[in-house]
Image 1 (cartoon, rainbow, N blue to C red):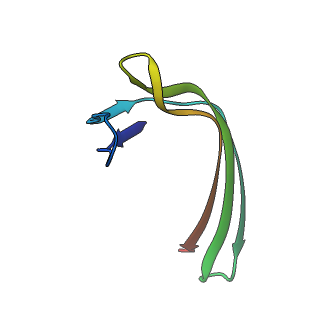
Image 2: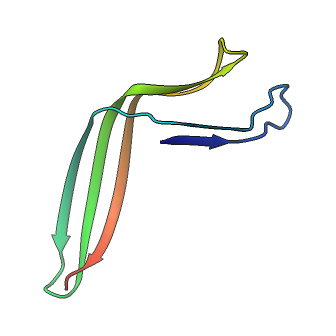
Length: 83
């Protein structure tokens, strides 16, 4: 889901909110390392994908103002405990 809110500072565009679903395929890779039997697990995740269902914000129904589209990447670091 893409949910945006805002009020521009010095622009003649009035924007309240929008909410729309977007999606596409995603590839993820994850590497994890357990320090010890009861000690933390450290992991790094890398993701990449391409938005197939884009979200566009239009002014007057025609002029594009913003978009959630195209390729994207993400990076995450995780820390956990073994139980």
